[in-house]
Each structure stands twice: as structure tokens, then as C-alpha cells.
Length: 586
Image (cartoon, rainbow, N blue to C red; front, side):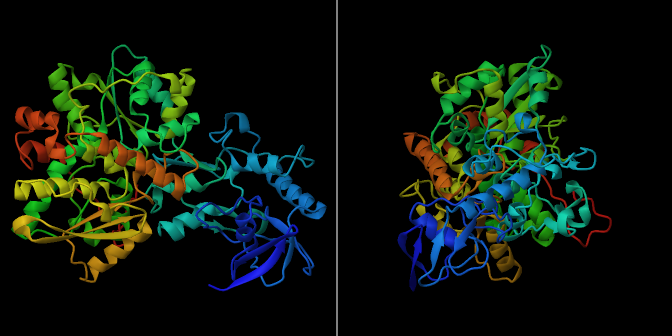
């Protein structure tokens, strides 16, 4: 790689040719404020103008995030001219921003606040814009709220939606001072092709996009003496919740999380991992049935509701490839108001089922009309990791000092396979462990299937499975990567038996409801916590070894893929493609 030599603030720098001033400055520890760029390097070029720098020989200041370095360039990042220009940009942004910091969802974790502090802004000299709330806040989606009053025009949401997820729902509209980011034709979000993944929330520097908050509804249920309120938590929560309380990314806080949920007033604290193990039993048997009976292959996982909705919109011709298994959240919900209600002798109408998820798309999934296998809405409320963090803070709990507690029976037991569901490749690894054991009667030589781990966009592996021979599998995370596999299937070039797709980059550990910031470094740490949890389970690292799941089949379900299982644990999908007349995407 060719390099160039330049000078930044009197320091000699050697940087790759074609790199930007921002990248060169960061390489020697010089911080330049930005609002349109984020840590993965994705940004809408020069949109925010906060990163202005002075280059000798240039007539005006330049945006460091897009201006390329050249041989002999001399750059100044801290002159009076630069400082005043940055202050002016931030001052104008604040003058055109609602003054709601004290009760904004991003208060204390807002990049605009941090940049204002960085540039030393002490007052806003301009008159603040008055914003009517009517018509500027879109609450149509059950998962995501858009508040266009707070949009600062950085276009990060546009970039992640278009370039990373390839959904392209959000786009700039109008011109000049009237420009704003909206779904196509300025339609409500629910009428667009939005898959509710929430990646736009993770990259938004302010509170212009956030999850629909159900905290008050859950508090109301907890305080109703006539209701029996139970809760489940996805595996990714235990690897990320600590960040809401200042703990390092990758802190495994399972026991403290359970203790906090009991203190909040939940009657029973169960685990989505129980249902993850159950999912593997059902999904593994479905895969074996398709292989043996000539069913549709490759079979694709169905755990990620954002991915499922993406397929419904953009690849409806491949819906038959998706496993009919519900997600672990929804399997748990169906069993909570049937199996658990029967076991605990509680009328299911009095059970309120709450799930804590890393995923905003789970909010959409819970209200799908087909998710009522129990005869009731299977999941009543879905909270994100961030919402749970807010509840714990509201309750005045000192999270870090809570003593560890254990899950309740009968839906609290889990195996190592269940916990790795939260990381990309985890569902595939868990499935292969069980499929191999079911087919061969033996365990895999190594339960750690490392080729499907990590942040590479598309991963492949081949496993020799006894009489089935070589089974080729693939894993994709992030919808842009999913497209690569789906297009291969359409072209008849996919020779896989099984594919795992997770909607969000990195899998559930970086879902749209996880703590902010989320970047590749943090994704690796959160995933590492889940693999550590898996390895720490000395026994029972395979889903079919879960004793509580065995009892569930013995006493209630009877057999995988049986009548009761199909009624409660399997589902169907909706063609939301553009060829469907008068479609309703929501």
C-alpha cells in the first residue's frame, strides 16, 4: 500500500494514500469532532460539517471526513478559525433542535451534547425554532418512533439502511432548509418496507429515532394484583445490560439481571434460552425431515424477525425455504399461556408475558396476528435492553451490588447451546451439535464449531454427519450479507443444506435495542461473553440435553413436529412483496 507524508498540528504523519484527514488525525491520537461519521467508517460524506479543519493552500476550511491527504500537506485542527467555525455549526444545529434534553431518551448519551461540550459552546445566540409536535413524530410502527424535529441531517440512518441493511427505506426529501429524512413518499413508517431492525437507532447521534417505549405499560401490569407477570430474557441481554450501568462491554451479568427483575416485581423470572434449546429440537428435526423427504432446501433459520420480514418484502419467492419454527421468544410465549399456565394452575387470561429483547423487531413480531397459538396474544409486551436499564434505574436499584440469583423452574434451565444464540453463527453451531448427535448417536468430536464464529459477513462450514455425509452450511449477519446468499439460492448456485441469517450485524448482541454505542469492538466483547457462558457449562452444552425440555416433551408436547408442537411452536409467513395488490406492509 502506498503512503504519503504530511503534517498535522506540527506532527509528522505517514498515512495511506487516499485516506482522509480524519483518519490520519485519529492515527496519531488527534480527535476531530464528527456527527455524520461513526466507528465503522460509514458516513454520509461531509453532511454535518462539524469536522472542519484548515489546510495550508486551501482558500476555505475543509471537511476532514472526506478530504483526502496528499504528499506534503500541512493541516491545522485547532486554530481560532477552526474553533469558531465548529462552534458556529453546532450553535446553528442547537438553535434548530428541540430544547427537550432533560426528558429526551438520549439525554446523557447524546453525541450532539458531547460535541457541544467538545467545541466549548457555552451559549446559543440565535432564536430557538418552535416545533409543533403534530405531524412531526411518527408513532405508526409498533417498534420504532421517528421524531423529525430532532433530526440534525447527518444522514447516518440513511447510510445504514441503504448500505449496510440494503433496505433503503429512509431517504432525504425536499431541498435546502426544508430537507428532511423520511420513508419513501413521506409515508408513515408502518406503510414502508421497514423491517424494524433498529440499526438506524444505534447510529443516530441524537434522539431522532428510538424504540417505542412500553415501560409504563409493564409497570402498570406489575402493579396490578390480579395479574401474574412473568418475564423472559434473550441471551444477548446478559452480555450487554451491564453497559447501561457503566460496566465494561462483555460483562456477563446473568445473576444480577435475574435479581433486578425480581426486585422490579416480576412473579417468575424465566429464560429465553430454554426456548432456544426447544427451537433447536424442533428446527433440527425439521431439517432432518426435509433432507430425508426431499423438502425445500436450503432451510433457513427463522429466529430473527427482522430477517423474516425482510424476506417477506424482498424475497417472497423464498419463504418456503424458511423454517416454520417460531422464534424462541414466540415459542416461549405460546408455552407460557399453555404449559406453564397448566403446570402452575393459573388461568392464562391472568398471565402477562413480558420479554426482554436486544431487538426492536421483536416488538413487531409480538403483535403479528398469527402469534396467538395459546388462544391469547402470546407475548404481551417486549422491552429492549435499554428499556430494562431505565426500569432498573427508576426503581433505584444499585445494579452492580446485587447478589446473583437463579432462574425459576420450569422454563429457566438452559444449555450452552441456548446461550450462544445471541451471537452470529450461534444458532448454526447449536443446531449442528444436536443434529450430529441425533443422526450419529454420538457427540461432535469438538462442540466448538469455530468456522461459523466471528464477524466475517458470510461464513461457510462443512460437517461430516454420519450417514448424511458432508453437510454444507452457511451463516450471514446483516441484511446486505444475507442478500448475497439469497441471490445465490435464486440463481440455483447455493449447495447448502442449512443457512443461518441474522438481521443485525454481529447477530442479536448488536440488535436495535442494545446499549449505545455498538461497534465491532463491542460486538466482539459481547459475543465473547456468550461463548464464555457456553464454555462454563461443564455439562449440557447441547440443546437436546436440557432436562426441562425433555420433561416438556414427555408431559406436554409428546414429540418434535407433532400435533401439539405444530399448533404452538410453528407458524406461517406473509408475502409482502411489491407484486401483491394493495399490500399492507405492517
